[in-house]
Image 1 (cartoon, one colour):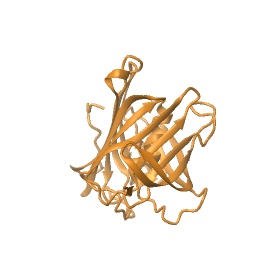
Image 2 (cartoon, helix red, strand yellow):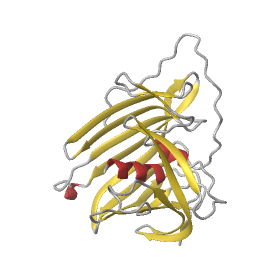
Image 3 (cartoon, helix red, strand yellow):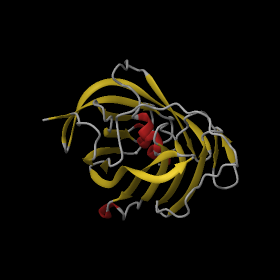
Length: 269
């Protein structure tokens, strides 16, 4: 299930204990970072999704962007957060209460700190990662450091970084890459462009870009294109609908509420 959650976050989606912290040696200089120009989101944005398994409503996820008073060498950070939980009627089957939190560079659109708290069916996991982006390394909080490429993302920041891409001139089957560091490993994650389509959800009709994230076959999915994500064909570029064919059943995630958007949503009346 964690690979499914990763793909949903990257393409289209923790009670905080100790917070990760970044320490620099005296006199250590920050390397220059490219500023990522984007108008897709801003602090104050909040998105709420309902998740269904088959015909049943199973849970909900909330994604939000907030200002933060944290800084790294004078660089301002945004706090982006994703929470997911099962609804009460579904908890008898499988209870989930997850929280992901990332402190992203407000100009470079990459993370400096990541906190993960998950509780899924009694399985619990706590992670506190520190991203030393100026050194191309990440510290897993357990005494291990790993080499990473430029602009490496965590599980939640990847969702926002992908929204900085320009899809307006994308060609059929063109691929977009996001490097995600998760569970002490680097996951080069690709999404494949499949054109435009009008989709209908409970909240109405939306003009969307269609994507097929390239996923590992033989585990949760039987084909690399069994997951389809629809992203609003406007300047917000928010996931409106995600559909996954599982080896047993199917799952959907659809947008049910939004506020604080940076631009008008491409809804069709």
